[in-house]
Image (tube, rainbow, N blue to C red; front, side, top):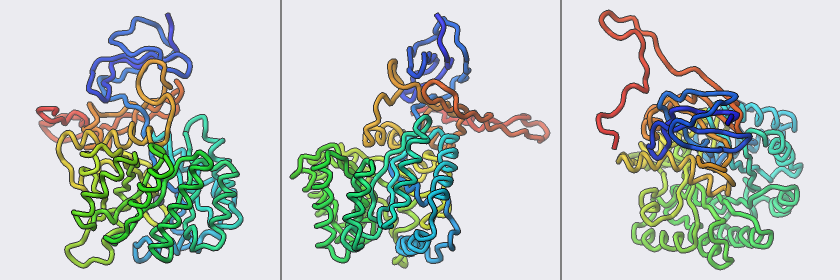
Length: 431
Ligand SMILES: [Zn+2]
């Protein structure tokens, strides 16, 4: 018996240690201790964690890596970011959008990030970014699953051509219906846009992912309309509300009614901690709100919650490195949620939960599934989140597509070890 690839002595995310993962073609053939077989290639995991690839369920690939074009965001606010993007939009070229997206995907692969849901702005009548990202989606298919959301950045009603452009983008093959109700001129327009967008999705049989209530306004309540429309149109399991930052500032009594509505409608929540913690609370003096949505409360009700990156070096966020462990780590701090159970969950929130929201097929570590996984320099998911662990190998459909040496430091201190492995620092009790 010979396999194409065997990873030996891996620890799985569910903590099972000492397992071999055998790959045949593009699928996982077996997961068991000490698989007696030859293989075209053998990777020694040395007891480290092998996890399914990271999934980013909220991103903007048309804007990524544009930081500094045409200038920096001085105020650091969402609104200046939108204005800055408006300045950049007419200057975009097809080639430049493709080149930045491809460069970003290289970075993503190096971080074990192999599936991305990207919003794409449809408020440029040329639909240049849509055309470019549809092309990128095909180009990167062998190594990244790219799902596109038709996103009317300047408002479905507020921008005069957005409604028409959104339909055009969907006709061009964009996968998901997007929106931005809190950016419409009035709350009523926002609610009307949620209804219109959900109806389009119902007619076309598509998923919905709206930028929803991305503000500190406790009265911004479009998520309520989104849950109600999901219920009315029978879109259960196909709808996500992104950001939901206003929920941070809402009245507790109101939230106690809202969350069961979301749960009943099967609406998922996508929080973007790197962006929420930096863009929200900007009108506050002190105390300054964190702006992150109510993750523990939603989890307690069984509402699917995933964590997205949103931005990487663009008009809204000058940092980022396609590192979903950074995103999980920030969520743990900003919520805060420091129990072992919650930190462990934050790993799922950047892997299995968003994979379900995207509807990825054959995702996960099990025989018969796609041979897609990441070898991390960490003993378990919590340690991976703590260290934002190095990605030692990234496998896509059975092929190693990225490799990096372990992070080791040579020390020269009298009487102390000569090599430092950060992954050798572990808690005395794992759980
Ligand atoms: Zn976004």
